[in-house]
Image (cartoon, rainbow, N blue to C red; front, top):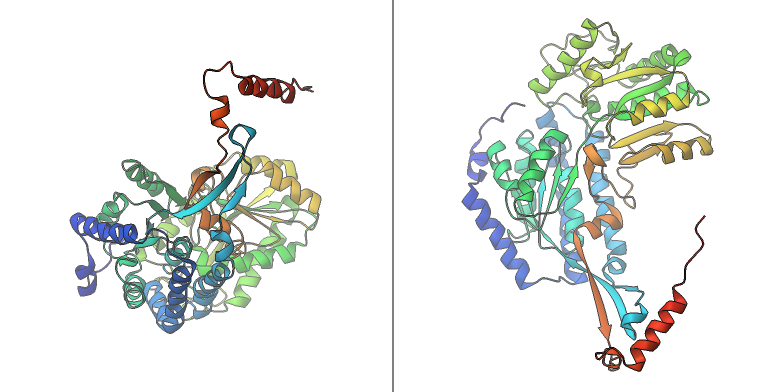
Length: 490
């Protein structure tokens, strides 16, 4: 990716390693002085973020549109602002219950006693943000971190500079620097940021960079949540209406011009329906976007370098025998813009780049299959993806897909919609990531589950203490032999 153009504000915010260490220490000191924020304090922070989003709503639209050189206000609302407001509302409603200590079973060997789990804030959470959803992917983990009682430092993406500058301004007006802080700057700053001894680190980005981030975090034994990507498949069963599948997938794939970590990356389609699916898919895209170049509804590619990468994928596929179907009803010259039309790749093979790399753009290979078992085998032969999409009204077959494949999340008969579902955990598996945030799992991720035993005035340990030939210990051992007898094994 291209380095961003230098601006006075970015230069002012580019932090050295010593600056970053100082800022982290300020937050850690502030946390140490108030290590267990009350429910009222946590709600106050969430409410401040809620109000900031409402105040800066239109400016967020403009900043993201500027970074992308064209992104629809509707997409920014649906994919960034509304999910954030919903996420805050979710925690405000449930936070009291999440904070409550959980009662657990106390075993006979420590009785009489009470066993509990207390959820304690970790401290300072570092959040590294990608460019594709610069507000949602920064503030969504922040919401969980604040709900759990933490403080946070956010590294904004250098490839979305207008968004980063605006987020820094917005949060600086709502939070003190020892509560929430936004750092801007280039790759060097990001590398130094991930090397800091945070109490937890959240990274969203590519698998390749995720390995580097995890390696840096390991030096400080910093736990990480990695939200990566991979090639998320969509499987269409032969019994599912092909026109419905095409339209639903067209909507999901066109969001942000496919620049989404959970965007459908390839479609497994019944062999005799590939042509029908492809035609309906292209028609659906062209109806939604009759023009592209000056159409504010169709999102541009974030940078010239990213567009060149995607064009290289298409050229590679064409050179290796693929057939390309392009959704460009107006047949416009897009060479001097960052718009790239949605393109289906037919006859794709494993030696093509579109089947080897995460696409992250408006390109969708369509792969024929002959049986559901073959489709499952193909999915399982590849690294485990961040998402899987299955289209089938039959609940039994859908349950088979859930049981026999691994992915970070699943949508049945839709795509993308599991991400804004606040009560569901969001996270990858294996090469597509580790850990979760969103929902109750997000609160738990950003908390330390502390086991606590409470003993009362009766000290049973004194009754079984050495010398071990005492009556109480002998009685305990007799009871344990009676309780734990051999069991039948099938």
